[in-house]
Length: 266
Image 1 (cartoon, helix red, strand yellow):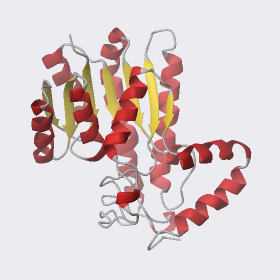
Image 2 (cartoon, one colour):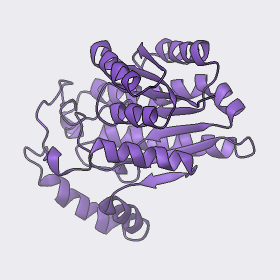
Image 3 (spheres, one colour):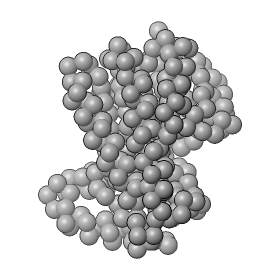
Image 4 (tube, one colour):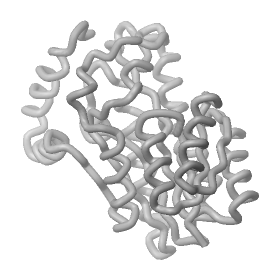
């Protein structure tokens, strides 16, 4: 019987690529996102690859939607082997200018979405000795200026998943924290401004970034190998390493790097 995987935020970007790569690997797939039209397209793409797939419209910031997602997955496939908490949103503004509701929205999606989905899937994942994956960021290792809410949500995700791993150390649960680095996707286009509107144009050259297909392949490979952490880029690995020993230097390097973005908020 094929393994069953749930992927949130699966209508585009890394989530879509995770769904397609999972289809190629023979998973039965449950995909979720707020935009049902795009999600249905991904469902059709997965089905064309031979996968048994279920698309569920839902907003991970809503506890009941997460509960229903898990319930529908169990009703259709009778088990859950892998949960990938991929749904996420970013923000870009200095805190002094930012409406607190923007931070709350980012936390609700990035952290609470991970909490809700993991909480309700956990009994099945424990039965399967399966995997919980959090799609995080270097912003979960090092605070990024202009992304206070985003960094806070990823630091929270790291602490939550690390504690979950230790809590279930003797129960066979696998927990992976995956940090792709800058990846070509629409997360920067949808990043919230100081007042909560999508910023629209990305401040970075998307074509020069890691492509979502490669990110998805590396994440699923890490799931197969039951790795605890995955940092995908050289700059990301260097940042994590240096931050352990010379954090003040890294503060300056991060500031200088982020301040060079077009229309930088600082």
